[in-house]
Image (cartoon, rainbow, N blue to C red; front, side):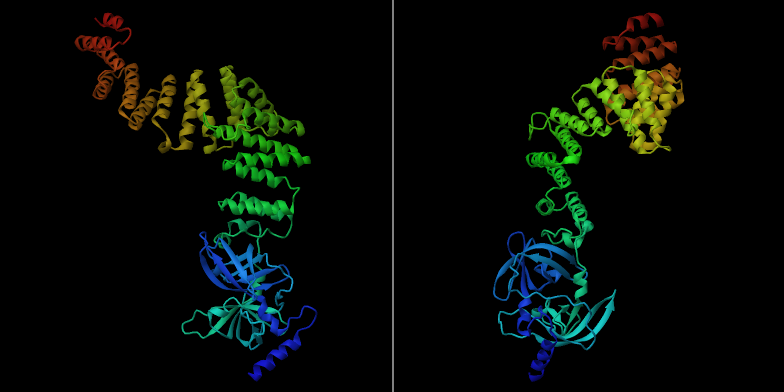
Length: 566
């Protein structure tokens, strides 16, 4: 006992400066840490210690796993909420956090600047309500270096009461945090270098840090600068983290940087995506009012969110009537007035198209197509607007040509909608071979396994117009095989029979018609086609039988056909 007291006196004699801590006060830096689940039940109870001048605490990470709330209790029984997590590592079993405990008259340790050496005498502080209790005199029995830091073995008892407590050097600095020795029958505890805890922090990428996200308590904003803090807040807004934590982060950022309008527009986007249009509207109005040189960006975001809301709102339901296509258009026009950028014209064009004001939409899209942001999509938009406005079909094709010309070759899946649209327009314009070429390219991009019967029917029509009869017959067969039900299958069989009749495959045509009759006994056109095939084969009996059936089912021109083949 006398030796321990002498050792403590010796350590105390080494404390210098105004920040020196008396040995009798060292234990007062240790706090009891209690964590709770969502139902308010206690999850864990452990220990940590105050460090630095901001009221931060270092404690074992395991105490916080799954905790939605936590508090600390100091040696006098004073309680304080854990406010923000400042860093965490499950690998090191360390966590840093801030509290709202009053710092006045509190003992807060300083981190050691040098590691402890083997055989060094240190003090073990622990949680106690006895203000006269002295820390224990222990030693470092082994110091193993790891990445410029140290893991220690100590002479401290391997007891839960000491896990999370600090070891202090002769200068009264915290050199390590005590950890449980998990070796079987171990009687002495381990410790981890305080420098590991010093490096725990929050940065822009922390929004996706698993260790931090496994502790659903709000995190401390990065302290580096406004840009880093915004990057972290932005990441939080684009994560799958609980919305309450995201909102807390946004509020923290706005409290520190109240003139930053970007966070308001980003938060508005976040809120609107979750249907909270009232709060999103309030953020947008505040952002526009204070945006200054960023006014056009804020107005553009406002227009986008209004437009997206209108696209998502079903008929008969409107959760926020203040946002309409008209208000979206007005915001886009104001954005363009503030800063005449073509992207704002593109936004106007899309809104006008949704309002079915196709001629005006076409003008906006063509203005964009004359700008530096023209691309395949903007020419595609213009072609759609012109078509819907009843414009010339060849002009529509020319715009689709421009859209395809803006695509990189070899084509990827992005090119698919442009090629498919152009193929249909080319076929309607009688450019069947060009249409077939686009359909072939489309099939190559999308892959046959991802195509429907309808695609092969469309290409069959283009191939027939191109007199590519064998290819057309092949596509007819594929369409039949992909039909989703008997009615659709019968329709494609009819197309095949008609093509077979056209190329004088009369026996095949009759066989196809019989396949139709097995599916649908009342398809008038099938009987008519079959009757014509028999007529071409000079089988008047079958011809008359089939055409009479077609006539009874309401097929047109059957009398003329009966007269022709008599």
